[in-house]
Each structure stands twice: as structure tokens, then as C-alpha cells.
Image (tube, rainbow, N blue to C red; front, side, top):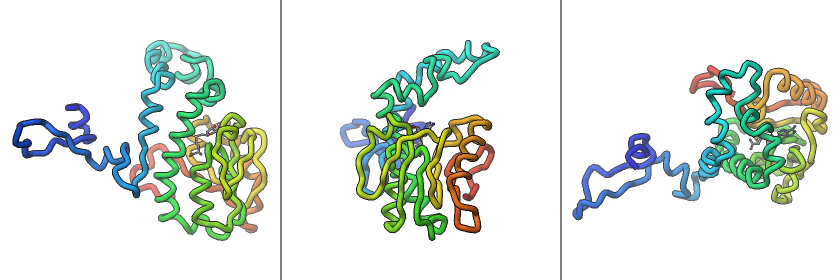
Length: 233
Ligand SMILES: C[S@@+](CC[C@H](N)C(=O)[O-])C[C@H]1O[C@@H](n2cnc3c(N)ncnc32)[C@H](O)[C@@H]1O
């Protein structure tokens, strides 16, 4: 508890209770991991994934991974499969990842749709490429009910996705084909791949949308190395 208190997850009230019992309180950070109110989303599935042995095991092989000249990712070295191949093999792990991504979308899409709503105007059809269980697509469809929203993801992800009246799901591989739409949305996708793979995905994106003058658009939400905290979309 001390570590968690020093890291700002819990707080200890400055005034001790009359019976000298130590009691801990929640900080705003802790509220992101618990359902403190109905407004804030609960990001606790992230912790479940980060503490899962499939996720932590590769770190125990970090030493030999560093020494390995022809190394692939630490994850693949530990498991013989990449992150997404593992999700295809292991239902529990697949579910963990999909829950994480929905919780992230519940949290982030509120902000994106409030701060950048203009990006989504005048779009009739949108595909959430590698959109997981459709957390983002559902938020976009709710904010823009006239928009036809579709999620594209791998078969083992789409099979388990909750059905929705406002979002449809397509099984597919973004490296092979992305169906046509006015706009494509890719959240937390590119950072998973190397440059060559990103170029392949972007080429397929280009094939799927109309030209820029006709309103074609690719909307990317991702981390940008070295961007600092004030980077704008
Ligand atoms: C980090 S998650 C992001 C999910 C979603 N975009 C979000 O932000 O909630 C990456 C997603 O890419 C999907 N994915 C991985 N390889 C793919 C492929 N070849 N074609 C389509 N989707 C793929 C995974 O199944 C997973 O849902």
C-alpha cells in the first residue's frame, strides 16, 4: 500500500482517525481504475492484461532477447507467436485484449468526439479498421446516427463481438483488403507494426477511400514518438 500511496494511486488522510486506524482514500488516478462515478470510465481491464502471465512472461526473457542478434519481438521469442496470433490461439487472452480496448474506447472516444467532432462531419460511411469489439465505432455511431459504421477485424475477434443495431462487423485482414468507405478510422493500430507493415496498411486504406476532393479521409488515433504532451491531431 505504501508504494501505491507514494505513486499517487491511494492517499492517506493527513489527520489520523480517532482510533489510529490507517485508512486509505482514492485519488483521481485510482478513480480511473474503479467505478467511482458514472461519468468516468473504468480502465481496470488494462491492469488485468498487464498483470496476466502471458503478458509478463516475455519480460523475464529480456536478458537473452537483448543478446539475440536476430531477435524478433520479446513476446514472440517467449511464446513463439506474435501478440495477435496468441489472441487467436487463446480465448481468455483474446477476451482480455478485447475488454481492454473497449474500456480504452469508452474513455478516449468521449474526449475525441468532444474535442475533434469536426473531423467526423460530412462522413456517410466509416470503417473502424482493426476496431476490436467496436467500442469506438459504437461511440461514433451514437454521436453521428446518420453515419453507417462498420468494424473490420480478424475472425476470432469479430466472432466474439457483441451485436449492435448501429454498427456492423466484417471479418477480414487489413493487410489483404479493406472494404470501401468514405472514411477509415484506425485507433491504436499503427504502433503495433513496423514501418513496412504500416505502409502496407496505408496502401490498402488508400484503395478503400475516395480521393481527398471527394471527401475520402483516414483518421488515425495513435501515439507519436517524441510528440510531447501538447501534440494536437
Ligand atoms: C490495439 S487493438 C486496437 C483495437 C481498436 N482499434 C481500439 O482502439 O479499441 C489492435 C486490433 O488490431 C486487430 N488486428 C490485428 N491484426 C489484424 C489484421 N491483420 N487485420 C485486422 N485487424 C487486425 C486486433 O485483433 C485488435 O483488435
